[in-house]
Amino acid sequence: MILIDGKKEAAEIREKLKKEVSQIKKEKNQVPGLTVILIGDLAPSQIYVRMKEKAAIEVGLKSEIIKYPDSIDEKSVLDKISELNKDNSVSGILVQLPLPKHIDKKKVIGTISPNKDVDGFHPHNVGNLSSGYESIVPCTPLGCYLLIKKYEKNLSGKKAVVIGRSNLNGKPMTQLLLKENCTVTITHSKTKDLKSECLKADIIVAAVGIPELVKGDWVKKDSIVIDVGINKTDKGIVGDVAFDEVSKVAKALTPVPGGVGPMTIACLLKNTINCFKKIYN
Ligand code: NAD
Image 1 (cartoon, rainbow, N blue to C red):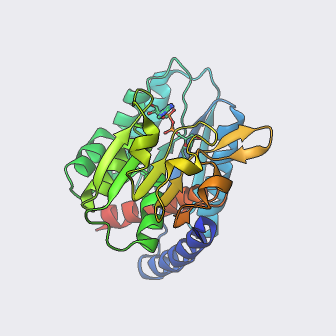
Image 2 (spheres, rainbow, N blue to C red):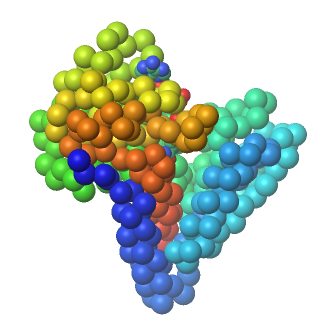
């Protein structure tokens, strides 16, 4: 079995991006900038934002975190986003989710300029992706896609099963696989007999949030299994795939941690640099 090393792959991407940023700095005397808006004090959000900042600084990006208390009103957040949209030193804007209940996620995402939407959540980018046009692709599915392509260059005609239909993961993942001419089945909590769907798949992407849902006897020999899940359990962080069982059957599998997670951050940096290039040109 091939252990798909997302940590190594992400480090290689970050190294390339570092060189790219240094080249941009030399040529344009400017560096791409990532601004993250963090509302409230949810511990996981704070950790994610700190990780994003550290990675951004490491590749040479300008990084800014704007922190607001939970009590901030929606208008102030929308006004700040509009201001950042006009700021030429800001290439990418990310509003860390989840938001407090009184702030409308749809309005927030819709206010970010589609050209600075490094998360790829704006309806403009979602529409472009599903139409097969060039777009900013959400970071986690983009990371999964790059890992799959690394081990399987030609995906045409492959049967893929995506577990989970979230806007963040499952839906954009489906679009990326469709673009590669896979035959894609998107499954979710109401899917009947998920096991038999998985058993048909050459590629499985699990983005569910249920610890070790995908078992060894759900997986076809020679399949590629990408585990997006991050689940806190008594035995530590585990994915949506029962790693020990599935690793005995699959051709290639991502570990948790060290698989998709590092790729998500690398792809955020990649998206920020691409936004800079698009705006600059
Ligand atoms: P979500 O809760 O928004 O969506 C979960 C999806 O799973 C839903 O579409 C639901 O229909 C489906 N589902 C629920 N129970 C199911 C079942 N029994 N069978 C089949 N489908 C079922 O979750 P999300 O935001 O897409 O995140 C999914 C997982 O990925 C979580 O563990 C999350 O922590 C993790 N995640 C990881 C990264 C990363 O960088 N590795 C990034 C984002 C999310």
